[in-house]
Structure formats: C-alpha cells, structure tokens
Image 1 (cartoon, rainbow, N blue to C red):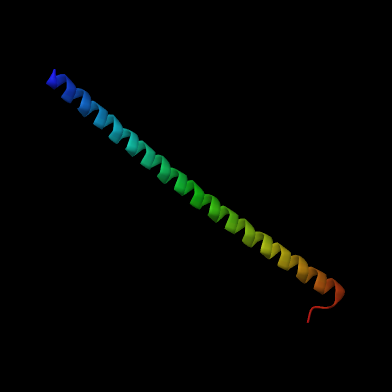
Image 2: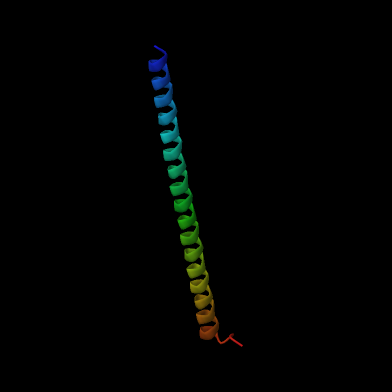
Length: 67
C-alpha cells in the first residue's frame, strides 16, 4: 500500500513539474511574441514619421516655403 502511495505521489510530482515546464515555455513564447510585436509597431511608426516628413517637405517645396 505504501509503495502504491509513493508511486502515485511521484507521478503527481512529475506531472506537476511537466505542467510547470510547459507553462514556462508558453510564457517565454508569449514574451517573444510581445517583443516582436513591439518592434514591428516601432518600425511602422518610424516609417510613418519618415513619410510624414517627406510629405511636409514636398508641400514646402511646392509652396516655395522651403528655406
């Protein structure tokens, strides 16, 4: 009986460890995805800023107000 209880306890601990490892891996992947999204948004922002600056320069050139 004690041997069966120890075996069940061992398996429960093993299962808990596996679940914790999977959760840790999921958190790592979620963190990587969040970092990638942040970098994509920053890049898009830089592109929009450059386009806006280009448009402003084009207007200045067209109106002759570019000094």
